[in-house]
Image (cartoon, rainbow, N blue to C red; front, side, top):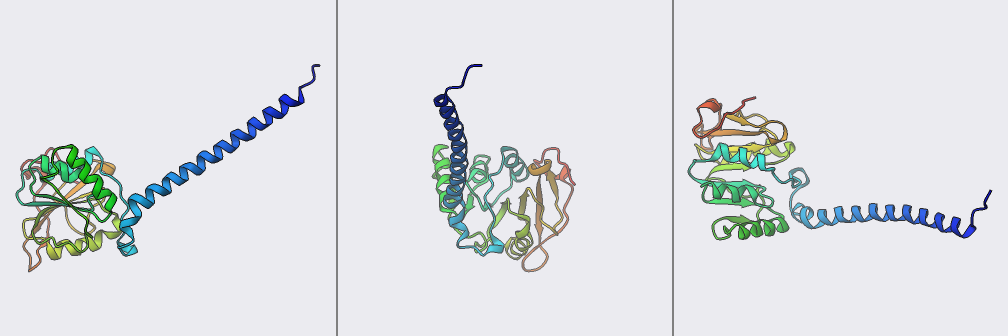
Length: 226
């Protein structure tokens, strides 16, 4: 039997160890990239918001944006997106005729990205992205509101919406429904589902109450309630 060359065996062993080391380096590099994304895109805005009100950024899908616009299209008045992220909903709202369209986002990197998207679309002079805490923004002149927030903050959001929105306003919540309000329309399935709520006069602040079925909402496509 031919004897193995010790030098070749040592070289092979080194190559195997190098392969394991490379895997470790790749894993470490991936972790560093993930941390960098967190530090640059997510963490800056969180520093100024109490822990219980923090909401991580997850961009809306094309189908979610489509559903939001289906439930707001054709309505008059100011449109705002609370926690607008990279600005995709605001930009799409402007393009479909919802004007003025304003996004409120605390993270400066995402606000910058939103302006970049608007500039590339030729709409930088027509939309507005403001670096402001959505919990401190006044909604008294807002008639169309979209939100994609975590379930943990939705009860507090209900209080803010009810206290500030004018009668006749509509709120569209993506991914998760408002916990106690009754929707007038629901579109989509799974994480692409969105819920629409109408605000009716019911005191000085207005109150969300059950509205008509989605089938009676002008401009709404075939909707699935529940």
